[in-house]
View 1 (cartoon, rainbow, N blue to C red):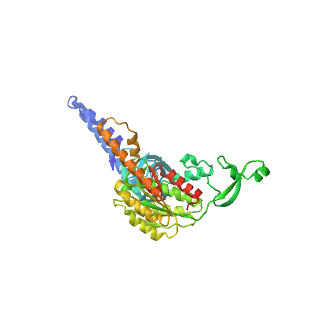
View 2 (cartoon, rainbow, N blue to C red; view 1 turned 120 degrees about the horizontal axis):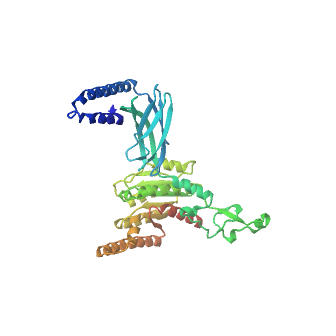
View 3 (cartoon, rainbow, N blue to C red; view 1 turned 45 degrees about the vertical axis):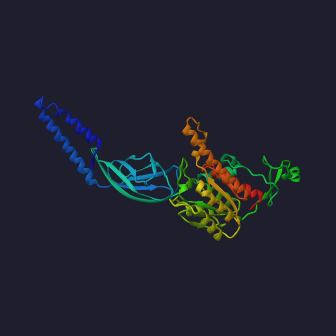
Length: 435
């Protein structure tokens, strides 16, 4: 129980005349009566609030799964079970590391009435979290006192990678506007696959795909559509080592890599392929590729609590492990962020995998390198820094050429550019029939 602002203001007003009592002695008696009256009213108000006891029931409504780094709405519902009007202030006990807006919330509830209010939370990391309860503050009948207590109201939530990209991909795919995500339409070099169906001509279709007999019959351009080979396997090797802890605007490299992987898994599922994940570098997990209903949701549920560790990634051991686990020829995509001292190990791991599989190495580049490369050089120290940066970037390009020499595909991209780059590479591979 604490004094409310109204009681503090009343005490301040009563204290002002006390300063004049030494100069005007006759004010002492009226001032004493005023103090006694205020004290009496405050005591009565205090005991009324104390006797009433908790008269509030609470309920929280929140989704059981939330996307990381994205706003989610939480609804607090409060009901007044007492016989008097209440002014209630609620502050939800959201998990540490979450950001919240529009808290605390204030409601005015009549006798037997209920109210609802919403606020927004933004989770900063993936994993399991608990909303333990709600802090409640109620004003006394005369608003001189405020009583506080905690109402248990437990809700467990799981914070998943930001799956808005998957939803956006689905919407754009339906409207054939994938260029909005940087995804290119890949034209086949040949016809590839088997005949699937006839459909209306779309801008960009090759002339040799136009079915002229169907066109003359229907009076509009009709194209032949061919079906890619289906039921192929993708295996993502996700580095969870210390290199992936680097933070950027969209979250850690691991957060953004996992979101990109899940997007491509969704694309592959729509293409009739199966995707699996092998994580290494301190948190080893193996989720084999399976063509089952809800396969992408299964991947999401089994990887949402993956976090970058402080361990160093052992690329060769991981490659040997995947070679043993995945006997069928697959598209293996290694997602990492290497440094100069890692490049030889990454190359050897890719060569080991390439004995059986088609390999893509997605080596994430910190976006700060691109910013530094564009910064004007204005000093000798800046020139040295710029030269060191160019040397590092040249080494990365040399590694890419070495990959290409051995028939290994590679992507040198920032984390923000990874989703489109992965999908484009996958579609190009599907269109060329290399797998």
